[in-house]
Image (cartoon, rainbow, N blue to C red):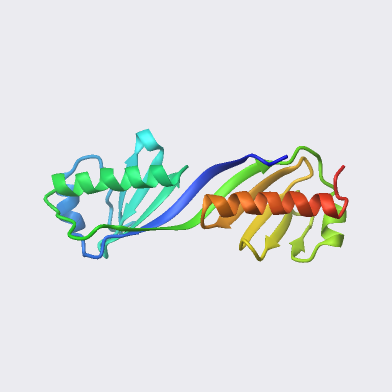
Length: 181
């Protein structure tokens, strides 16, 4: 049985390949947060998509809070429209690169974390400090937090396919070493 993986957050870097005059941008467009004394970028929140974009004068934009690649593309379209409204023409097509995906999944059984820690390499388990077991996979290169309840938090994936593969691989390993409760 396959495991259902839910994307919780995608962080991406959008490269505009040009400098942005942030002062001009925030002067022309309402709804932007800009306090250069506290933070060097403009914060642009897109409420409908429940995400935020951090826009820097270097032309780099960090997008956080997206639940899908479609959300990121929609946010970039929205941002390009805002630049246009502010009199800033983006000359090249922006380059989008996903940096990190955080996802969650639930195995259909409980997990004996002590056994998993003893039988598997690349694990850290300190139940007095944290209730989850930290499990590092090499392929796909991800870090999982595995909980006794069977819940898994996946971090470090670059694609949703990698998040799915990591969850499936973790489930298979737990079953193979007999850490199923």
